[in-house]
Amino acid sequence: MGQPQQVAGRRNAAVQAKIPVAVRPGFHVNSNTPTEEYLIPLKLTWTAAGALESGSVTYPKPSMEKYEFAEKPLSVFTGDFELVANFKVAANAPAGPGAAVGKLHYQACNDRACFPPKTVEVTIPYRVQ
Amino acid sequence: MSARRLSFALAAALLAGGLIYFWSPGPRSVRTGPVKPDKDRHQAPDFALKDVNGQTVRLSDYRGKVVLLDFWATWCSPCQIEIPWFMDLERRNKDKGFAVLGVSMDDDGWESVKPFLSQLGVNYRVVIGDSETAQLYGGVDALPTTFLIDRDGKIAAVHVGLADRRDFEDGVEKLLQSPAPAADSRAALAAVTLRSD
Image 1 (cartoon, each protein chain N blue to C red):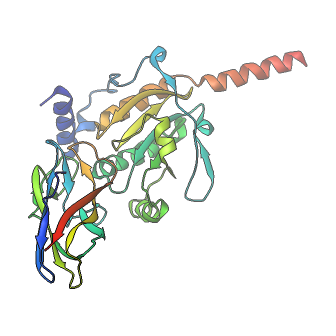
Image 2 (cartoon, rainbow over the protein chains, first blue to last red):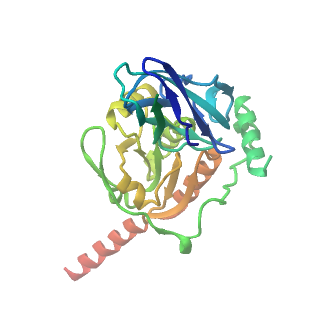
Image 3 (spheres, rainbow over the protein chains, first blue to last red):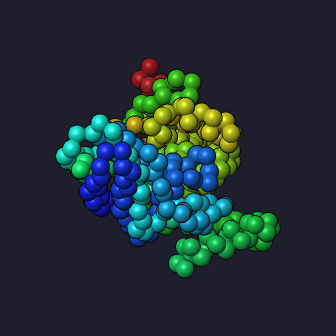
């Protein structure tokens, strides 16, 4: 996962943070809306957003890929993509820098095997103007 | 396409047509590729894990049997392809000294696994694994990972990821052809005991 760029905004302003994600060639992760109930979705959640009020996360459009191990195509993310986190700067936010911390949970497979679900920490630096 | 993949594709195509058994002119030859020779086998580490009834299952309980030890998880699609194969192997070979033992690596344990087993009608024993068990077997990071264990409790073959069904069938068949040395030893011991009496 790449390092998100710093976001900046005034109090009550809506700000967006782009989080770059790269999946190694030959691997895929389930999308945020997997086609089967038993599959673990990719999910970004915020644990400590600081002076930001967390809003929705925009996921890219998944691709439907057919693998030897599944009868139907699966909804997956592959290659490089971005997640967009939407925030609102809190009305009482103190001016200055801070960081929103979250977790990205995902589960990856290649065309013959799957790997245990993992969680990586996501940190978005911000500055309240 | 590799020869292995090609043979799998052909077998799948023939099976789909329901023809493979009718076309077989006689007993099919056993491919021995993935099964290691005796001298290269190492003892399978023992473990004690709970089954769905809360009973402790030890791998050593299966000594004298050929065991297919399958590390899997409910979220693993390739695992779900293999499970019906293992159910079939269990059904066909359970009376010949063979058993399948599934080790689920689901973090939430029986909460996910129990309904899954019921839904599929899994006919073999399943236990819930943990990181300690996985470490005993080299980490088991990729699922499915399946070990074929001989009657002496030694690892005869390892399959990481989705394998060919025939590799399992041939491996089990080959290992079942070996005599059960543990039973032989017991018989010999009994004979010695009788003589000493």
